[in-house]
Image (cartoon, rainbow, N blue to C red):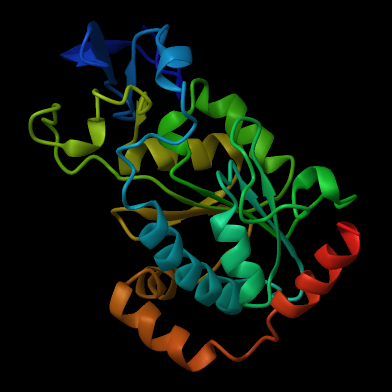
Length: 261
């Protein structure tokens, strides 16, 4: 197979039993180290539920990422602008960010909007956003370069999370993030993979080197970005900035109350 990022030849590095029944080959690019599965013919079955029942960390992850997003927006973006959570699932992050005073909207083609009803991309005329977030999305992309272009059509900057490969010799037995029993993680990134994406898209990459990353046309302080991704620092700064913007909760409540009359 050709690499879906840089179109270089790939080699099979391991096999895994997807959904505990399909023997699937995983390929690694010799150039950018991107790992991809063979053609993911099992995805319809894998997404019978948009959010897997094994994602028991969903609530805590959204809370944690909402704090870091708050801090990163305050540091590098216009906090009075409009924001989009791409593939935003149940809308939990959007609700948390609106509660913190940020004008966030949700986009998701496949999942029911539970927590941010009436604040979906289909509920607004806004076409361009200051920043798009895409948390736990990149590892699900079937055609990363094309699907990243879709996100970039909404915003010139993407703040996203995906676990980077922790070593050169990973496999399902030594890295949980492969998650073959779920079958949804079909794209696994190395830091070099993200650098290649940034170069091909004409963007700058900022990363904590592990999990949280930013693709943007802007030039920012990379050391500061990495510091703001640190849990202890983000928690400390969030504590002092939590009242810096007026929450939209009451305003949203009144809006929704009028909508459902």
